[in-house]
Image (cartoon, rainbow, N blue to C red):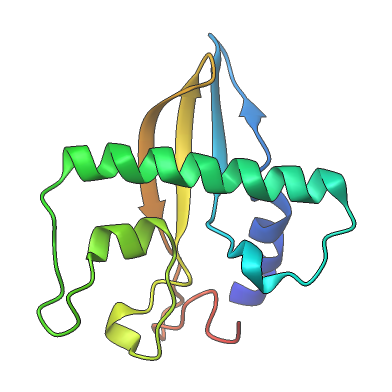
Amino acid sequence: MLEKVYVKLQRIVGVKNEMEEGLSWTLIRHTDMMSFDEITDIDLFYQLIECNCKIGIAWSLMDQSFEKIIDRYTGINLLRSVVCNASSNLSRINFRSFYTAILEKDDDIVAVASNTWKDNGGNTLCNNC
């Protein structure tokens, strides 16, 4: 079941969903642009750049809204790792299955939420990513 959810989520990442009164929501993820040898689809390239820019703004809003939480063993900023869906070989600091949802009003980000999905066995969407 999680595999179906994962596939559907991948289709809507970066897609702006318009609502009433100038509001819209978008599901975004950070993408490491260095992991691509070559991007031939300019629309995909633009979408990835736009998502990364919005992740930066979302991170800034979250950073201003919450106290910094630093992992005492690695020294990483956990909130930043969640928003940027950072991966790690250590499962306790592996956030690659996280997505960030943004709410915009007239193209200004007004709310940010980061989330992940797990099944009853504790498996996340990206266990096999």
